[in-house]
Image (tube, rainbow, N blue to C red; front, side):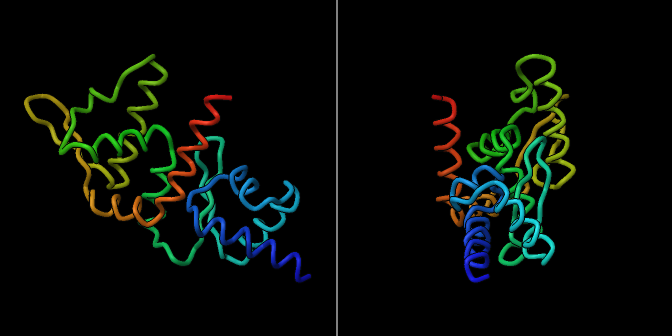
Length: 168
């Protein structure tokens, strides 16, 4: 029983250190088998120690304590590729024309428009119209910078993993 709790504690700590992490990344960092990980995640969720949010085909995992709902929401959007790109671009400037983000094929454009609408709905970004152009800006850039600083290693790990997966 002690070994099971030890692995569960490890999994919990991996999620705590890397909020918004997905299943395969938890598996890699914890060194657990798929079946073991599924069991312990189920138990942690049942005990209401973690929460799970669907992100397309991925599930993102968060600890319930230590981060508030608004922090978990921001982290979720920083983990998603399309919304992360929008937020990062907005962090680098004061405000940006919405049309600048909408590029690529029609399907990608639709996803970007949907992501912008979701970020506006969630209160992460705001929109205003100036001379007929939709302009986007972050509602609270300081909160986003604080999260990126607090979980810096976690975001660097995911960035490195993404780059390495592109090279494979």
